[in-house]
Amino acid sequence: MSEGTRKALRAIDEPIDIKVYFSKKLGEAAPSYAKSFERVRTLLEQYRNVARGKLRVAFLDPEPFSDAEDTAVAAGLKGIRLNQEGEMGYFGIVGTNSTDTESSLPFLAVDRERFAALVTDRLAAHPRVRVVREEVRAIPDEPCVIASGPLTADDLAADIARLAGQQHLYFYDAIAPIVEADSIDMTIAFRQSRYDRGGEETAGGDYLNCPFNQAEYEVFVDALINAERIELREFEREDAKFFEGCLPIEIMAKRGKEALAFGPMRPIGLRDPRTGKRPYAVAQLRQDNLAGTLYNIVGFQTNLKWSEQRRVLRLIPGLANAEFVRYGMMHRNTFINAPILLAPTMQFRARADLFFAGQITGVEGYVGNAATGWLAGVNAARLLCGEAPLTLPPTTMIGALCHYITHAEPGEFQPMKANFGILPPLEDAPRSRRDRSKAYSTRALRDLENVCASLVPTR
Image (tube, rainbow, N blue to C red; front, side):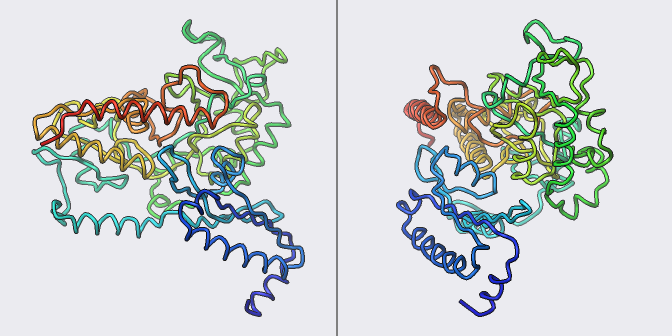
C-alpha cells in the first residue's frame, strides 16, 4: 500500500460503510471471479485497518430473492446469469457515507462501447453476413427487419412515421414506476375513483389510492426535491420539447411545496375509508396489466437515480415494502405504438414482410432487445422459406414480452423490460417469491419444449 493511500485513509473524517457483494455460486461457476473477490477482500481489510474505524466493511452473499440481492440491484449492480432457471450472480461494491449518499462500483456492469464493438465485429466476421456500411434513409421494399434503435436517424424516422402514421411514432419517454400488486399494503391503500365514478367491472373504482396526511406529504416532498437525479445527455438538455413533454415529478415539486398536492397528487373527490375524510394528498396507482399483478404510479415520471426512487417512493403510505419491476425514467427514445402496429410475431400488421425489433418496438434492456431481434430474424427467414411465422407462448419471457408490447393499452403504451409481472399468473402459485420464480421457469421450459418439438425445421 502506498503512503499516499495511507494518508487518504487516515484523513477520512466521516464514517464510510462499504458493502461488498459477491455470490458464492458465481465463484463456484467461474473460479476467476472467486480469485478476484479474494484480492478485493484482502485489500479492503488492509484499508479498514489503516482507516482506524472510519471505514466499515461488510461482505454479503446476495442469494437469489434475498434482501441482499434486492439492495444490490437497487444500488445499480448488474447480475450475470448462472443457470437456465435465471438465477443471477453479483460482484460489486456499494459505498455509503454518513450523509446517506450512495455510489456503486458494478464490476459486472456492461461496458456499452466495448459490447457494441464486440457485436459489430462478430457480425462483420460472420461468413453468412454481409455488412453494408451505408445510412438507410427509407424502408426497403423487400422483406426486412428494422432494428434502428432509440436514436433512429431523422430520414428513416420520417419514413417510418409515413408508414405508421405520425401519431404512432414517439420520440421521448416519460415513464412512471411500476410496482408489484402484492407488495402494496392494502390496509393503507384503498380502491376508489374520484367521486366514485368507477365502472361495474372495477368494483370500488379504477385506481388504488395511497393517502397522505400533511406531515407525511411534507416529508415526501422534501425527500423528493433533495434526491439525486440522473444527468441528462447534452442533446436532451438542448431540446426544449424534452422538458415540455416529460416534466419529472421532482421538478414539479421544486416549483412549490403544494405543487404536487394541487397537481398529480390532488385528493379531490376521494375519501380515506380509515378516517372518512379527504386526504391531504394522494398517490394514485393504476392497473398496468390484464392480470392485475402490476400497478403504475400515475403521473410519477421521474429522472431520479434508481436507488433514490426505491428510497423516496417507499415513503408513500402503503408502499413501504413496494417491489419495483420498472423504475421511472425519461430520455430520448424513438419507438412505435406497437399495440396498434405490430403482431406478436414482430410483423408489421399492414405489411407482413416487414418486421421490427429492439427498442423501436418499445422493448427495454439487453435481453429483451436481443430476444425480439432473434424472433424477428427467425420469422423473416421462415417467411422467405414459405413457412408460418413463430409465436412464442406468453408463459415464456420472450413470448410474454412480445405479447405485452403488442396487446398493451395503445393510449397508455410505454416501453417495458422483461419481468415476472408480465407473465400469466400461475395456478396454485407458491407463497414464497423464490418458489414462484422457479415455478414460472419450470412452466416456461415445459411450454418452450412443446413448441420446439412441434416445429418443422426451416430449410
